[in-house]
Image 1 (cartoon, rainbow, N blue to C red):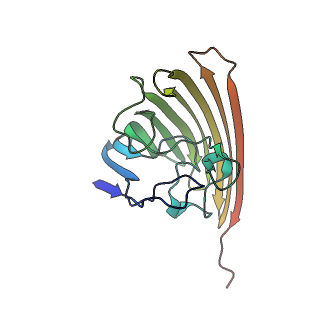
Image 2: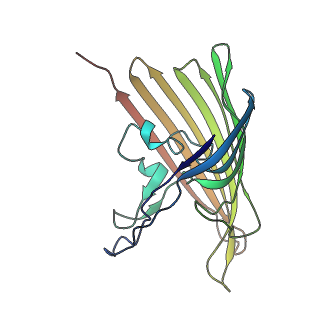
Length: 216
């Protein structure tokens, strides 16, 4: 099965009202499922990390993702980078929903370019590593954790510097009878490998409580 889902307006400078409207891929990947215990995803897709960041908009309870996940774009307030990760091209192996009686297991490992979506090349010769492990009970309870490491190169030649971002994710989700509760925490540390500066850390927490139930 080939899934190609696109047509996305590229973000422009928040202070510039004139910008081109282009098309860009959102998801474009192949999935091979030889058995329920081992799948392979190849292409550009959401990474196996936090629950909210990897959820498609069709399943999202709100109009947009939380500030902790998506950050604040230029022109919408004090610009800040989100702690979640955008889609990236690469390969993911594992399985997301393994039924073992009443339990559901999630174990996935990803190798990606670490340079964001719609980028054929990388900013250096190093890949980004992402992994997630989770366990659930039927369709009611989900508990998961993930970690990501990405060594990236920033700046312009000849003043390029390398920095390593390490991010940890943990989340708990509870669904029953129209009630949807999610709590997730994200923590990221940035180490400046070349300049030997002091590490920079950031943390975000998101919670939602939704009741979606017909009353009549």
